[in-house]
Length: 242
Image: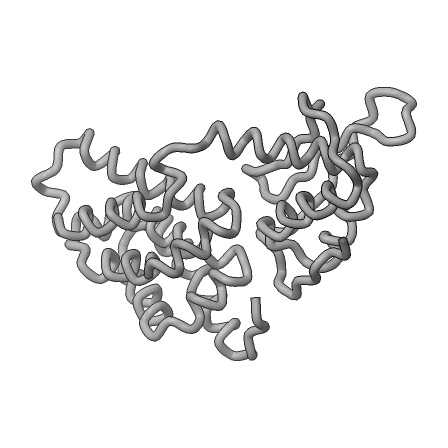
């Protein structure tokens, strides 16, 4: 099956780390997409399917990674055995991560609930830490989950939930780690072509990110400067279809 081409920039880029453990023709390879996410080749426990079926299965996996055409071609150039190892490794990871936090609906419900409690003053320290842990988990999910997670999050208007939360924050929340983490979620969303296009097309995203610069929290300021610069730069040029 011929690989489908994609014109986007990919989910954070793909770098190859080659580790030769023996003198075989094909070394063990780890495919690192970001600092916190890698496709580790593993020895599969299931027998490898026929080449045509394998190419179809592998194509679906690669599509979820939102890679550039160059990186897609590199992935499809791998030997069949390596494709099967990577496919089994990724599917095993997805099975292990099946929980409430693997569903966009969970995070959107949490965002709406947290936004409804507009102040941190009534929260215990543990509650504040738990809120930030949830937002950090969303940031990680937007960076590491398959593209269908990002697409579902967008379809459920997850970006608007984040922006509404940012707009509704009181002073204490604005100066907290929660603010920094929310900006980090927008940054993570912009790490793939569909998310980036969605952020740039949203009527309020640039203004709300710019307003977040008013915080005294240096970490939040730095995150905002990066996101706002990417938004302004992206808005000045036509966006490719994801």
